[in-house]
Image (spheres, rainbow, N blue to C red):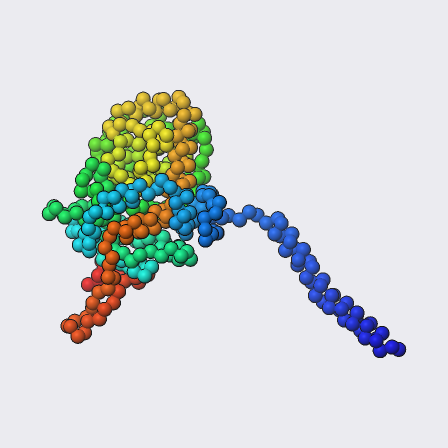
Length: 433
């Protein structure tokens, strides 16, 4: 036969064999993959983010963005435009003053704190005080973790942070020397009527990292609170509070007296040794009304109460936290006198007008839990604080000399890295003896 005919037949046979070996195997796979993609469940976007190089038609969506620690500066400004009042206030106070290395001394009047150095986009620990106490140690570690996450979460964005140095006080409030020196301190709170506190820079408190001893991360706490979401009319129609009274007997004692025998109150005093009447943080959200009271200073309890979609009830506050300027009376909380003398009148009104109470609860939830007290907002706040602080503070050399004698000293970066700090004995203060 014709050789060309044989070659043609052979080629066709070979194609058939290849199709059987590979084609039949591939087409079901392709069909399955197409079918899977078409029917897959929606992705939960809590930890999957897009980071556009330019802000184009991007809008904050709390369900998608609430846990995004790596928003760009433009995204932060678009998402949280009203967040930075306390940072701006501190900048105005210090812009014509001198923040030197001496200005950030960890003053002996403060029992606990940490001095930190930001060098080459790295967090370093220069000095600590109070690590021997469990509560202070947890506060220091929680703040350092927040800072570290705020820095590292934007490593993929071309927005470097300047080298700088600062001191954070983790006591309930900062103390200052009586010799007239004004120290530039970072703190959880400041007293609104104390002139010494005018130069304090407010930071997110330790609860924005985690809630000890076993309540979980802040993200988990917000998720637990959402499980109790519902209409105000469907929640337990009571005002709830638990706490000790000795930290502020004037305020907390007044609350106990104002709610005694009231059918709308579930208010009870506790002791550290008796947890019979203790309520888990998220269980407060079962109640229609949640009341906050100041203690030795501000109360970090308010942050968790605002995670509920309940009606916050607040007495006149003497202390300020970094987001308190967003509290709007009769809009996102119910204001009452500091001695709670008008509490009964307010409670009767809102119990009789649940639609009004619902509006306040909705406004509190959308303002705080869904926006300004989210983990995303906290990370944005930390980075804005760092940049604003750097604009008015001294620029540290960032180096220290170690060794003995003139000829044996060597220069090295000051302090130790945060990662190294975590590996040391956590009950000892740095520099270690």
